[in-house]
Length: 569
Image (tube, rainbow, N blue to C red; front, side, top):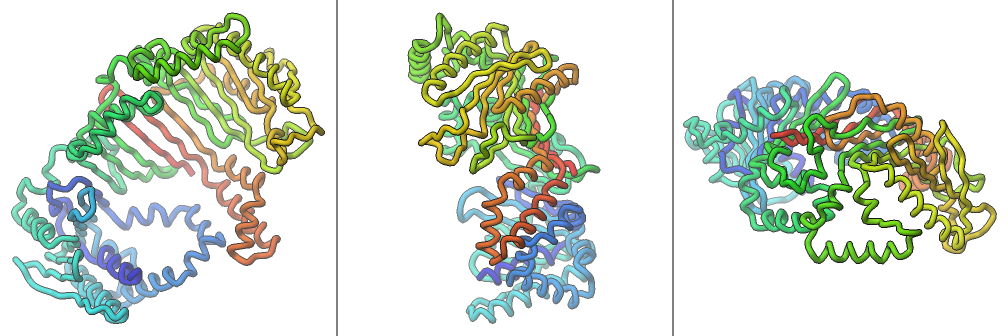
């Protein structure tokens, strides 16, 4: 049946065309719609990438292309090219050059449709009949009693492939559907050019206005209909009661709750690719208690510049006013959960030094947070742990400098307790006029709970840098974060409330630090020698190093929610 599926897929790819917009055939009752204006351009956006070309030389990818399924697919593609007399890039233009659209509904057994528009009606007709012939031969080869059945209806050629799949050709347009009634409805809607087509739906037009221009592909979801489902209503109701979800993704969920549609697009840019998602709802209608997710004053930045020290693997910068959240916990948290939290903090404060009030410290915590994961230049101990972790650092603003002194007291008290149990040694040093307080594990002293020496990845430390508090997993990382906090102090901030960035060069170094599991897997799955496996892992690492960066951003403007992922070569 999988081979039959390949043949059915051939119908999808090798038959289409005619009208200027395939969405004209999609009934407006669908809940989800996808569209590709130029299938060839979409495919070439990926196949022409240097990263894609180089990936084909990697051993795991070669294995995929050498598989039985892949060989059979390329054999079938070669057969189609010979029969139609055109290589696949030009053939795709001829039979799907005016676009491909698909529409459907959420839920099992609901109707769906695929519409393909071509530029050459004669070639579309040949491709359509050839696909039917291939599917018929495959059914016979598998011993299936099913055979494609054809009939003409209202000038369209309709072919039935069995229960749940049929196709039709109307000039240079090909349609594939899971329900006969749905396909017939699509033909009627397009023939009459009535408002019954999704193309005439206002919400779709509004979505297209929100997205950037010239997409490779777009996706639209009728979220107004999705919100009528009881499960969706329960999700929104329960989420609003959960203070952790409200804290982490409350603003995103609120924008989604107020949106009539979800729109997304894929784009080719000079330096790479962009995925953009848009919701027609923004911060202007946030409840007052959501001020901890976005700056309450206009003109205030949404996030500070990213920390990007040498060896960086990943970095993020967010706005989350924990101090505001704590001060307004009476309205943000359910009564029972708020009481549990208050009781827990009161118990914690019994073990804190002096009159330290942990709750008061939360109220002084600032709204701007930055975190970074980075590779070690040198490991913090002579003893090398069995599993090596990258270093990490954190920097936060403070509503009041008392936050830094309060956290200092708490950490010193915790460090004293840990010194009794684990033998931690406290030390202080000065870097760039900043005092760093650090805690190190003693070497040469076995620890029963850590036979693999994982603790030797860490020498926890903290510092106060100007108006910010910094913590890190190693002294080396702390020094780098201090430098980055000062380097970025005068750089422009961003209106986006959440930004993250992944660095392929830094990520590839993790492979070199943790090669053994990958080498073992290559030996077991590929039957390679140790040297061959090591070369294979090294080749993957070199390929990853060249992949550039991935930048993720959330911007909640007054009227629009924007989520973007940008890959830069």
